[in-house]
Amino acid sequence: MIGNKKIIAVCAARIQDDATNDYITALNDAVSDAGYGVLVYNTSTVLDVNDSNNASWFYIYSLMDFSVIDVVIVLEETIVNEVVIQTIIQNAKNFDVPVIVIGKQREDCVNIQFDQEKGFEAMVRHMVEDHKMTNLHYMAGLKNNAFSDHRLNVFKQVLQDNNLPFDDSMVSYGDFWSGPAEEATEKIVASGKLPQAIICANDKMAIAVCGVLNKYGIKIPEQVAITGFDGILEINFSSPRITSASCEAADIAKKTREVLVSLENYKGQTASFFVPARLSFMESCGCKEKAPVDASRYLNMLNDRFYLYQSEAINLSNIMAQIHRSDSVEQVIEQLRHSMFYDMTCVVEKNFLEENLNPAEYQNEQMRDVNREMLLLFDSNHYEDFRPYPFRLKQIIPSIQYCLDNARVVVLTALQHMGTPMGYVAFYFMRLDHIQGSRITQIANSLNSALGGYRNMRYKNHLMQQIDEMYRIDTLTGLYNRRGFALAYQKLLESENESLQLTIILADLDRLKYINDTFGHKEGDFAIRAVAEALEKVCPEGSLFNRYGGDEMLAVCRGKLGPEEIRAAFTNYFNEFNRSSEKPYEVDASIGVYITEENEKLSFEEIIERSDRLMYEEKERHRKKLSGQ
Image 1 (cartoon, rainbow, N blue to C red):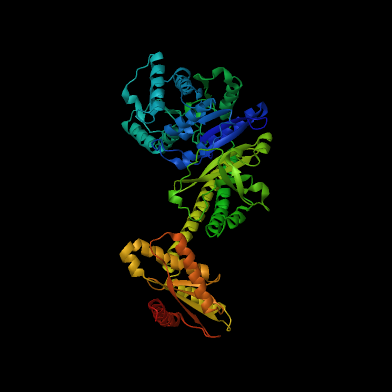
Image 2 (cartoon, rainbow, N blue to C red):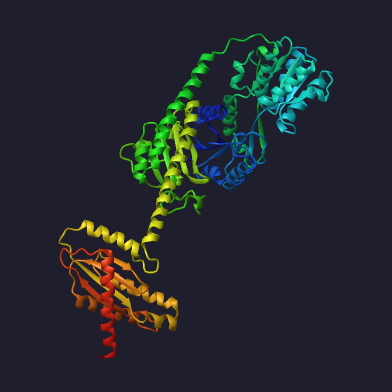
């Protein structure tokens, strides 16, 4: 429960489809006054029946927090993927949460099914027993398909009950789709042996059959009667309108509420409930013509959806382009403040927008932890002053209690880019309709592209910076290489006024060959790094450093520094370093100091030239000091 509301988690796919949309709307209407709130976990695509590894789409179902969910409803015919369906059911069972499956029979679940066999039987009996037809043809779906074969068996049984013969020539296969159904009908017409009626396994094929018969001037139903099945919207605009059978969303929602009231009685058991089909007799079977359907209303609805889609697609395209070009999360949020993103919350994985994270390799080890911390990227309830903040996944959305108290449907849709989960976007509507269902998918897909593109651009910029750094930075010491130093030094000259005076410090590691030959090159590298660290520690903040030779390094410092103080600082540093390093050798360096005259702006090449001369003099001085001369 959340507050005083019991939570129904509906697992669905393609909420933009009318059948899915109608059921969720009807369910919310049916249960809102019974103390229930509806959360929909939706993926924008049907999960391929053979794809068991599509983690980015399955991700949305992994976000369910079973500590607040009281019942799970699985719309299994929308999800399709068997592995995903079984995983959802098993996860619910692990938390002792009951599962209602809308679709085919599942063990240890409460099953609500459209009574297709009885509905199809009633349709065939209507043609045989009411219209007294004896010569029937069955337009089946796919061969060896369970739905199609069940209806074929019903077809045979009705014929047998009425002492009518059956043989295989009375069956054609339209594969549940228009093209194959048209081809099969062409063969029937070409045979010259027209049946009295063609019973179709679904409406799509019935519409296709009508089209072919109309093309050849074969009158419907006078010469051949037609029936369909499923009750899709398009049968109302066929010529003639097609007799069909359907299971209404309102009927399934009503049965769902009845089951919820007595759900405790079926805990841990397999129970099945059947919702009868509603037969709608129209002109295609020869029944009396009904009142015409208001086609203008449906056309107006389709126009609204189409033109709204076009208009919003343009807006979304512009917003996506701006998000791609954003330099920060704050700029992304500025784009999300557009008026079309109303009643919406966007939550992303906390680490996903970090610039050094490769999106293609992103994996969150806590992906199934509903207590994990996310990032609330945007909330339309705070358009003006919103700033992103850490957000616990268990909270779902900040306004969850308000939505439930006001009977709003909350639809959570996965965000993913190139197969990588990013988070989710939640929509909450006072009333979910077909236009809103389409907007959910349209906006979610646009955010997938926009946020994924932003993420990729950030990572690309990160890689470019790394590549640039590779060309500017010496990997062993972390100091500028020659190219990097030349660029940095040129910027220094351009940014300072004419009174610029610089102190140039040269450091050359002593006895590198001895260390390499005696202790190995690994220790030689250690000694080189030690000299680089000494330069950075001794020189003032803001100095430029360069490794311009194997063991030769220099620093350019602003202002005039005392040469003896510099040498003393290096001596003190190396004395302390050698005491604490526990190495079998001592690290020391020859130090040369050159101070430019005021207004003397040496080029990079002149610095190197004078550095070499200084280093030669310093080496000679150091050699004489060691030999006692």
